[in-house]
Length: 415
Image (cartoon, rainbow, N blue to C red; front, top):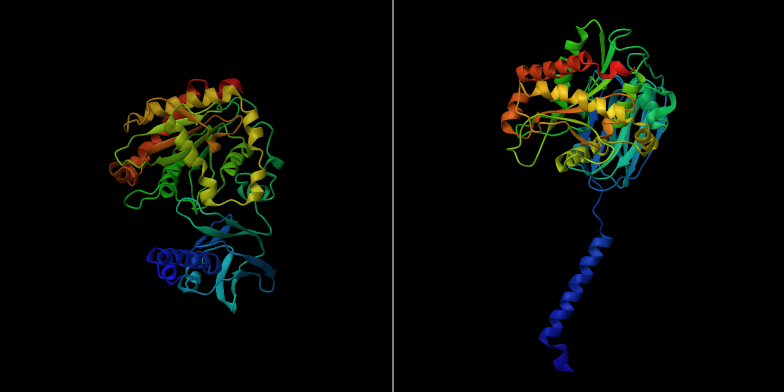
């Protein structure tokens, strides 16, 4: 009996079992405490977003107070740390909705955030699971109670409908206006600078952010179009703000656009990859593995930028059903005109218009293309993308493609 107790092998086995038991207890019984690892605030004229990023999911409750207007958010199991202490320093004086943020330990197990507001607010709070470089997030969107919308920019109203899960409520059955574009009425162009707000898009080695570059290019392209007497131009965003993909499409439909141009800057793990590309929609599978991969990454923009589940009720399958073969053919035709002009200013990564299931190109009656201006992951092209000269060249190339498309009939021929 004594020999069995002091048997070395038996002793090592018992030690291993004990260690395994302690490990399992520590994992189950001593879970990591909640901790805020980053705070970001994104103000815009449409709405302000506050994002709290944490190592584990947060449990919270919120309520509104008036005189003065403020939102109180209590978060369970959270304690004040250095990141939270600096949260108010991110509030900008020009923010139209958020005045300041106070934070404190309400009790030993609850942290309280008080968002002091500049006007009546309709808040949208939701959580996001980890994706890409982001951990768990609690998102606080601050929308004005008295939503101001104009015929030229229905974005706020569309976002409100999106948050209610009723985005199609006021959209026209057929997007383009009646009459021949360019003859009976102005040609309406919708420019879509990709990404924005919480979603930076691709980031170059020198920290160039896709969302910034494509916004600058879109503004340059808008200026060119505005000089044309027979054209009107709108943008899905003109600020560093996150707009869900389906809301971008909805804005184009609401304003009855004739063309939709989404601007991006590509990225790949191999920094040697370079060149410009143009993409159109496909409902029958991608034309290449690269096109399929790009569509998948671009379609993740909603998860990265952060959308509430209520917006998921947008009838995406209905949009696909409504797509007409003629619209996709026109998109490819339009894309070829742009690609031909891009070839004069930069190497082409693909010499033909590629196709895949891009969510942002799913307007049923609007020829739509996605332009990958250059590879921001390529050091040479990242440098070029930062220059006003190359940005202007891209804008002029897309503009020339727009004009050539309509000069050759384009959508106008079938309206």
